[in-house]
Image 1: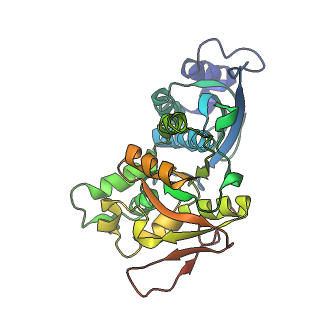
Image 2 (image 1 turned 60 degrees about the vertical axis):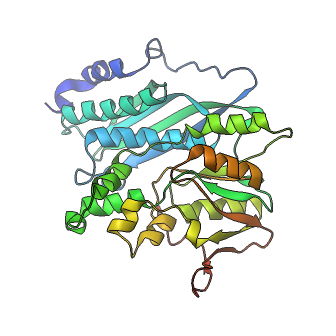
Length: 331
């Protein structure tokens, strides 16, 4: 059965069970952030042939990834999700089973974080496009912004980088993974198809704030466009620089096993890892890394000089100046 066989009314009837109860039916959803909280709004668009394809992602995976990308942006602001809206542009010839898989994937990701769909829109298009707007809430004194990094602060990443990019390479060229050992290939593919937004970090940050006797301002963003991109954007927004230690960049055993020659480049510029990059005082950073565990690391510190460099104390390699141009560019 195709989308055109259902018609608009049939499509809406198919989608409604995936939405939160008592939110669909009026011209808009009513959302109330708790008292003392800010409302955070973020939007992400995925386009067939640009962000996903049948070669690399099932409809379920497209649904999961589209939600994960938005929830990651909320986590990067320190916000807990309140709900999402879904705007779909669909070709009439698209199979209905693909649409069902899409919503099943979205629902599976949303349920992990106790939130759901509260509205959206449907329209005809020659290319399938998934546009999601996520709404979240964060206490006014706990907003994470890119512009508040301070000289001397440690730079923390919450997990491994480069796995998603490597997983995509394997999906595009399965021959690359023929020498797979101990499930490393599947681990990389899963990292690409089912990324995990780091909303689990927020309770840890809350405990750190509660344990300190002074206000703890945390700067940061997510690394969806690459680790190097995130660090550069934070430094530019905060008008500071950074010095990073190459040996501390967290690279997973799977990535180093299958792509040893390109692991660092994937970690810095691959993108779509959906980890958080956070800047905070060194003592709090150490405690944060200990609480997160696997893959988390302090990778450098914020400096006064505007330069953003990667050094390697273990070799004679010259410092590398990090930039955004080497990573993913939308245009």
